[in-house]
Each structure stands twice: as C-alpha cells, then as structure tokens.
Amino acid sequence: MLRLAFTGRASEVSLIAVFAALVAVATVSFSVSVPATRGYFNIGETAIYVSALLFGASVGGLSAGIGSMIADLVLGYTLFAPATLLTKGIEGAIVGYLGKRREVLGHRLRRLLAGATASALGTIILAVGSSYYTGSVEFTLASPVNPISFEVDVPLMFWIVLAFVAAVSVLYVSLKYDPSLNLEVIAVLTGGAEMVIGYFLYEQLVLGVAAIVEIPINIGQMMIGAVVAIPLVRAVRTRIPLAVRPS
Image (cartoon, rainbow, N blue to C red; front, side):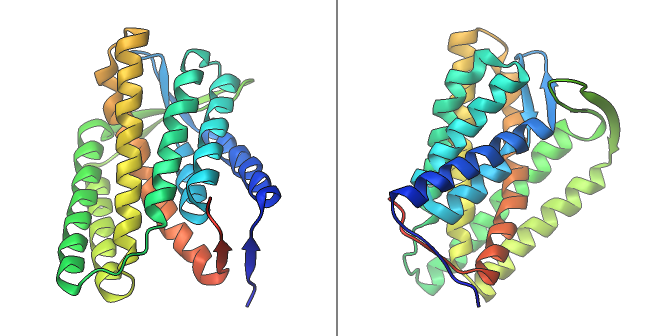
C-alpha cells in the first residue's frame, strides 16, 4: 500500500501552493453572481475543506485564504479580496485544527454527538435548499473571457433526498465505523459559520450592502463543500494513508 509522508517546511510550502491553486480553480470554475451584494456563490469550499481536513490548520488556512483571494481578483471581485484573504484563511485554519482532533469519546457521548451532527447537517441542507435553491435557478459558469449562463429547475424532492441521505450517512458511519466523522462534520460547520459571519460583517459594515441576502448563499457554499469534501477526504485516507505533521 502506498504511504505518503509530508513533513518539513519545504513540503508544507509545496502543499500550500498546490492547494491554493486548486482552491482558486474550484472557485473560478463555477460561480453564481449575487448582484445585491456584489458577491458570488462558488464551490471553492470543497477544495478548502479537503486541504484543511487532510493537512491541518497551516496548509488549510493559507491555501484557503490565498487561493480564494486569487479567485476574487481573477473574477473581478476586487472589493472582496482583502476580506476573502482573512475570512477564508481563518475558515481553513478552523477546519484544519478541529478536524485533526482525535480525542476518544465515550459510547454514550458519541451517540449523542452523532445524532446532533446528523440532525444539524440534514436540517441545514433542507432549510437552505428548499428556501433558496428550489425551482428555477440561474447558474453562471464564470470565466474572465466568456461566462456561460443557464437555468436549472431544481425540485424540492432533490433537497429532501439529499438532506436525508446526508443525515443518515453521517449517523450510520459515525455509529458503525468511525466516530471521528462527527468531529470532521463539526469542524466544517464551525469553519463555515465563521465564513458566513465574516462576510456578513464585511458586507454590512464596510461595503454597506444588503448583507443578509448573501447569508443563505454562503450557507449553501458550506453545505455543498461539506457534502462533497468529507466523503472525498475519507476515500483518500482509505486508499492513501497520509502521515501529516501539522504545524
């Protein structure tokens, strides 16, 4: 079995460069403009959570902040670049730090934590999806040259099924196989909450726009990032054990 060990400052700098590029590409490749806040929805959280959960706070935080800021500059959202560097950087650091905790939990506490985490994730997915992303939704595949816009009809049943599958999956895997899944979900939700609050404060206090409009957008980013990144990270760990020395 292949085993990769990433240690030393040079290796860490290389990882930050690679994942900053991945975060930037993921963010730029798919975005939805939000005119009310002059911001945009994107799927960059997926790459942020992958880097943070795999390699810890330093790699997760720096690659998240730098990569997301580069994406803002490429897409022309320069007003958000300073806030993005700080907010996304802190988000990645939080997810990386909490995701690396491996304390042993008691059986009863593990069951309670699994139930609470599964319920919270399912509720967030259903509430945000059904309220803001159901029906005719316009998407934009953004690029600096020729952005492509199209509409997709998203049924309510999609969010019901997604919320149910996500909640049951977290509950089943946490209780049956790996209790650390709870910690990873909590890490992502905590980091995502910091991101939502950070952008709200920046838009409200600095830009003076209707910041409340982007709260569900940012929650949607967190939600999609969690649903995609956590299973991906766990699949990578299963196939390629990673020995990481987080700093």
